[in-house]
Length: 302
DNA sequence: TGATGGAATCAACGGTAATC
DNA sequence: GATTACCGTTGATTCCATCA
Image (cartoon, rainbow, N blue to C red; front, side, top):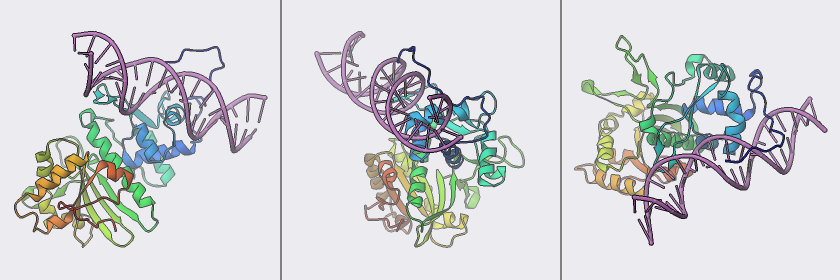
């Protein structure tokens, strides 16, 4: 750490200064948090909040989350460390932050989702952070072509109802009810327009080395695909798809090989509705690199 | 088993440009 | 000229992996 010097201290806008004016990066940070719920500084850069991490840490976030009482953003530091150094801080909107975003978007506060209970996913950090990386990449792909449009996007960590027994039990907004009381909760549900056709997709991200677990998870999508449950969910009449994203190319290969080895899968309708990719490829360009289990092009994003 | 390097984040500082 | 926003650099911190 650098030692204090006798030089004049660097000046920043006082945290006591009223929040009358938000800078553009601060506005972008609030909108990004409303979109993705949980963001690290690196993810804020990916989401276009600013180009430099130190700028976000030193100039953007302090005025949003280091105030005495009227913070718009809450930061959470995890007590544990990851395999490659410490885990980054995660930022979320506060209720006041959600109110500011609702005012910026000219919408009702109920339309702005923010985590009421704060950040509670230290054990799930890698999975959720990677999933949010995918969401940011998806939005970047949408924004890259004006003909594309995201019509709806739901995340598994968004809940409705109350966290207590009662008339409205808490449930994920991604829950898809199936016959005989069964249900499935994909990591994400998206409905978008590629510019040439509309697609309804369920997104699953795999970051565990346990291939069997990923295959079992994907196996749970067979019935919803057969029933076109994802398209029906969004009121769409074409076949729904499943997007399987693996944390590494090696895991993706193992998952595809295990899936294609399932009896009857290769000749099923669901085979053509399940596409595979890697996190690295998706972050580089969400719309490319998708293949079916036999490595043939999936053709979903054309 | 201890030393060392790699990887990643964070904090502090300085430079530049825009605005008043 | 002072203030502020934005960006880049540097060093500290922490853990894990590797090697002698």
